[in-house]
Image (cartoon, rainbow, N blue to C red; front, side):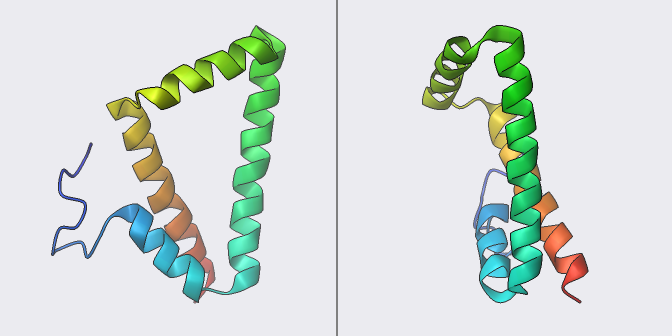
Length: 93
């Protein structure tokens, strides 16, 4: 993971915590739009993978990956929280 201490005094909390702080205080329409974009992207990726490897194989792979989250997945989640937070904040001004 990029930063080991998620509650570092210099950053004021993890990207996930900051994201939820922003979500609860930002313009509701902006938050809904960003979450809609994320869900749409997820659906597109799932559809593509289902077509490529099949629904059962996809479900099996997701279960396996979620049982032992890798550093790569954790870094991706970290980055997504930062990206979503930035998208909401830049539009909320």
